[in-house]
Length: 156
Image 1 (spheres, rainbow, N blue to C red):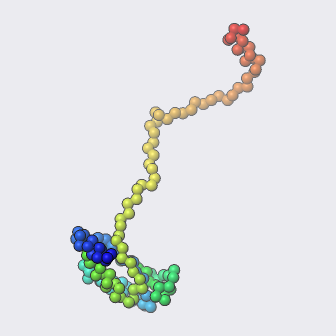
Image 2: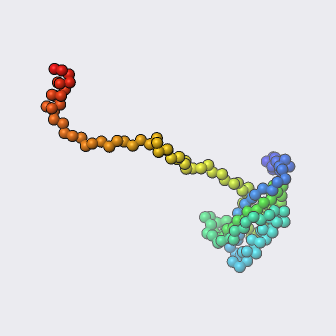
Image 3: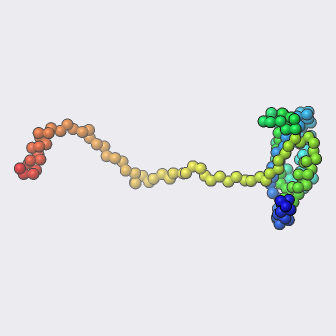
């Protein structure tokens, strides 16, 4: 049922190429000198499916977090390419046939648009800034003199 709905979606899609990313793990049994030839074969599979390679990263040997097909090391590489959505299924079938690929993932590449995280503060105009007046140090008050002045003011 799901596959049928997926095919219906593919029929309704426009025929514009989309950007995809292919991440893969190659078997460690491949000699280091031959890794690039296998990457070329993977890229050739993409081009046979009428895709355009945008960028290909050279695989590097990595220790895996857990064994995959009884292998604890693998060459990890990735490629970005443009391809029509209708032909992604044929590329998937071709990648499954390659026995030297331990695991792969084809995903649609999304361009991430982040909102601006920092708020830009506009400086205030100079005229609106208030500067506190300087205060004189507090003088010691004589309580008797203060009482006399109050009596004079109040008229007592």
